Image (cartoon, rainbow, N blue to C red; front, side, top):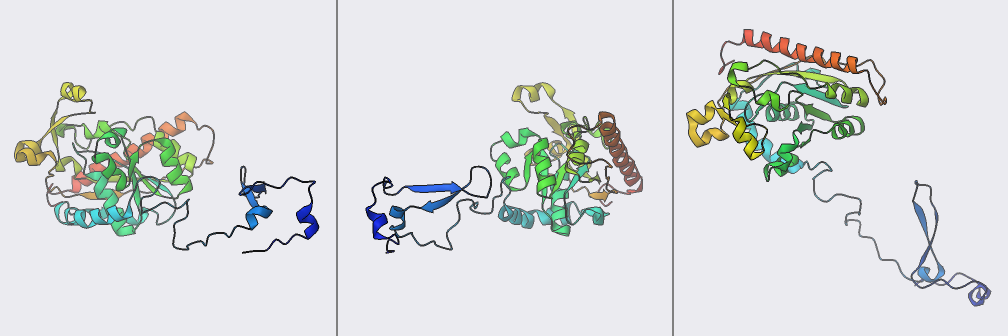
Length: 321
């Protein structure tokens, strides 16, 4: 036990009240607002401090491998092993221009969206993580987050609600790759007769996020998702009754029965990465020109649409590419 270093006169002085046992005095520290440096008083100095276990987790450390967004690398590794045969043998994904996706720094990946239960998101995320060894966070409608089991699994695999603040933090502060589908549910609700006809890219919010974060937009054109689970018809009244964005009748259901609810046709996927789009504007501005945002959004949509038409002209077979 440590001895009291004060002289005897200081021990018997009564001009200052003795501190209560177990209390501590603090003085301002230099770490930021609200921080303080702990200074032991005479009474607390007599109490031996417990030895710190170097193996015990610090209070600010997150237990396990689940990050602040809910993504689990352990879960991703399990799914990668399960999904890779589907990716490589069933869909036979073929990438063109993969080197255009940056290997470091943030970038917003923008792709066309299709299929009653879209297969494009897992194909893109798996392909980039496999080939470039970079994690990809996918933004999706809040509906998926609210579905029991599905919402949790989606979070563990890198999915999160499509909110601008989420995208900004991932792109700006964490230098991550973020995947977004500007067509939203308008793309996945298309019928087979409307395949590969891109819907409007909303109000161009994805462009403004990229401008604010100071990162490029990397467009990706995807062929194959429309045929993997084509929609024959929609049941809007039933969808409204169940509170879901849409309720499709797919060719998979008609051909495979109950297995067709989640079973895909073996359409070959071809993915083409287009040139990254950089914006000549300073980041973190309070506002950006609405006309410039809309013009950039429409230009990106047209580039993806043009690439899709070209890829379809060159495709000899839905099943073999």
